[in-house]
Image (cartoon, rainbow, N blue to C red; front, side, top):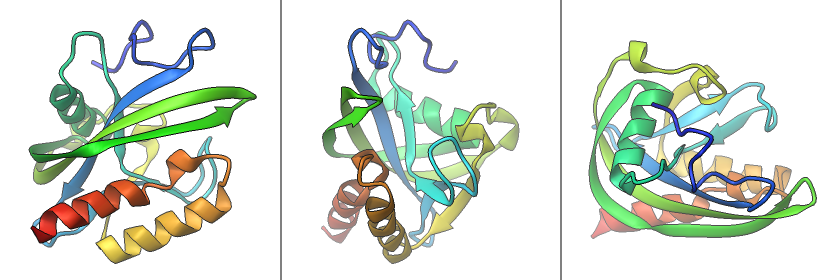
Length: 165
């Protein structure tokens, strides 16, 4: 069940505030799962963590787990809440407030048949080291200065910090 258009947490022209559960998903080697689009509506050669718009009356952890299944066909075990990254930026001449409560999860299994269609379903799932992901995020920040949400360095930093403790 994808986030439906009536979700209170999905930005609209009337009220541009958005809430998406975000997941840093780790495999057994400690690599991070990311979306990769060679070409997308947001730009070419683009990477992203998993984000899922929260449905009405849906716990954040449930939205995160649902997003992993819908976007990648993946089951993950949430092991930590990392924090909420909040951004304010313009999209089409409107100020958008985007809140990204972020979780750290471990990969459990994959069933590609669970993956849904749509922009996220058209991405390739890639596994990157923390260093490679941070390098990519720094490049994206330079390439898309008007879209600070495409730089997920803060969230990756929280995950790295949590794993060192």
